[in-house]
Amino acid sequence: MLLQATKITKRFGHRTILDEVEIKVQPGEVVSILGPNGAGKTTLIKILSTLIKPGSGDLCIAGTNALENALHVRPSLGVVVHEPLAYLEFTPYENLAFFGKMYAIDSLERRINTLLGEVGLAQFAHDQMRVFSRGMIQRFMIAKSLIHNPTLLLLDEPFSGLDVAAKQFVLDRIHHERSQGKGIVLTTHDTELAYIAGSRFLFLLNADLKAVAQKDEIAVDELAHRYEQDLKQHQMK
Image (cartoon, rainbow, N blue to C red; front, side, top):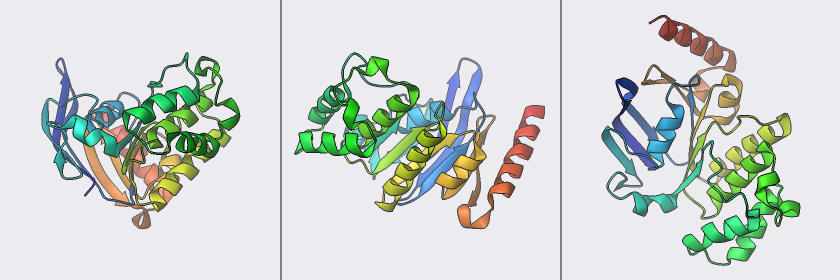
């Protein structure tokens, strides 16, 4: 088991964002979490990635209590969130060199050049990132998340704001990393992209995370229909 979260609860003031949420992730699976804006998807990803702590609950990553040993488990995590989490006045190469040295990566220069080539940023390796488009930033974030070869990827709305070509790149990369045995959690509000990328589907609505189906148990049209129906029911509450 790469990740197991149990009864994760998070409140901001009087509002419950996550209510006893539970999720497991095995090697080689992509867990797609569908939910509308404001459903708590970003909060969940940040908790799973140890960026913020839950109000209550347990989080185990690769057999380690991640809430008590965040620094120990972070090398096994690759994280993509809305914020760039990079120094935009620096170049992609400089950023990856900085983060790579933090993880004491062997043959770092070769690793950086390989990743920048794989994500299509080789020709921009020495350009300041502050002039990058949203799609270019996303490509860099994927390279950054992979620099230390993590076993678990946590991707928050990885398709947001991207054009068709950039979305396809992200999908291809997700499939590639899954084929390498990595576990992946991604959040999105797009049922089609969730279906293409995922192997298992969950809905996050009104602070509740609901298991829906494995990919071989449901067609994309049925997934979209069930999501729309559940969304309507929760909006009426």
